[in-house]
Length: 152
Image 1 (cartoon, rainbow, N blue to C red):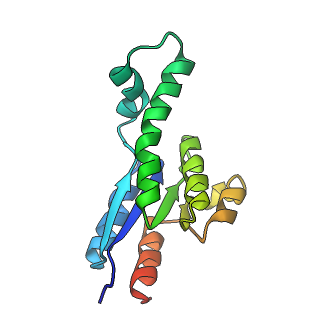
Image 2 (cartoon, helix red, strand yellow):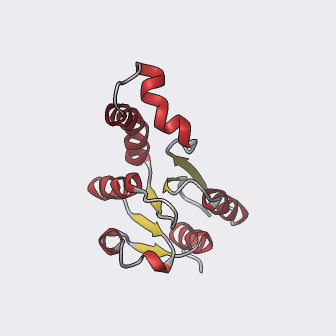
């Protein structure tokens, strides 16, 4: 029997279906979990600041404005979440995910990192702050099952 509903913030890499895999796995396990995330439409995320607040002359201020607008969403969702899963992929550098990890930890939120073993050395500091380091979405589902239900 589940005593509480959990909110899990999913951060990081947006070019694979890892979020869907975790969502489907927790649903199949019957876990009381809701997932929240940053905007995963890359173009919308990059351009939200200038689309809403007006154009900028340089790419620096274009990106800066977008990052600030996106931070309203991500900071609020991380603050409301019970824990965060931070995914780092091979193809792109997810600096925003590293920030999300640090922000979650600063708020006292537990984090689970998710990445391929080839990134272990590069992410050793981020992994050092994590309470678990997973290599697959299936491992994240098993972690959530254990944390929520206490079952293996």
